Image (cartoon, rainbow, N blue to C red; front, side):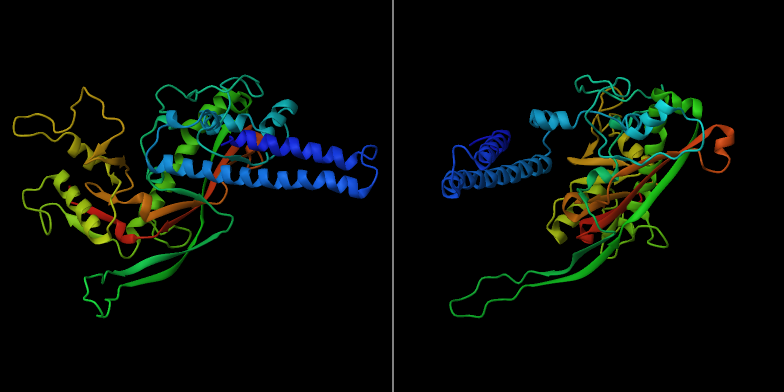
Length: 412
């Protein structure tokens, strides 16, 4: 089987040859002669175009399979690794045409930059000055001391969901409201038992999350400082607001409907009461919810979101001999996990609570475009004060296909 690159090259070569035949009036003196030479070329081009489409589909499936099985960065082909080379949001902003144009003509006078659409947290490029033509290398953003670079930050709620793109401000999908399994053994000639599935059609509106930060013109002229400022703060602020919306948005005004405000969630498990035994610890209570989702939804939970105080209590818990249940203070546990499930800590949850979910199957995040950065000194009196406003915004929507795939654990 040819590679995708080889198939595309074959299409290009045959197309060049066909163009030469079509323009060669010396060798082919009549239309019939030209047609006789072009027909087999066109047939072969169509065959190779179909091969390219098949190989592209195969590559997309490989990516999906690799993602679903938790394949690592090193498992990906070289081309995919090069496309995912670390390049921070701030680095892309200072390497944009808008920023370079301003830097060339100077930052004097009132101005507004064109938007810079940030395609991914990791982008191909180098750590050199804007416009440097060195080969791509894997680098971490050059952030101020004491600030955690976002590529190394813990998991967020958005990381747990599959991510999708949309060109529409509205998403429509079906939510399963009833799944009745009537399958059973039957005698020969008897009526077969009926199963039932019911769905509701749901429409989700995409919502805009935005903020801006002021910086001095002197900082803006210093591309390294501007990049660090954006990496350390602007992106973080948008992501924090996004996380709160995904979890607890109330659907009022411009808010999303967060997971916790969706009807049909799995019943909450409270530690030490109900389905949780009186002597359950926090880890036991969380496992009870994992089991409930398995039994009622026939889905395997893949992650746990938990507030920092609840995770602290679990991490510091000890047995009767005083030994930590976890690895203790001198052994790292990255990424964090509990009962074999990924753990994302978030202050957006109430204290001492957790959310268990089958995130990969139960929902999806949709974005219209990606994070966009724009800069202007036309805000308020910024022109007079030599200040610039850098704005970041995104449009995001949350689809929850199976609300019962998510359930809270209380009283940790």
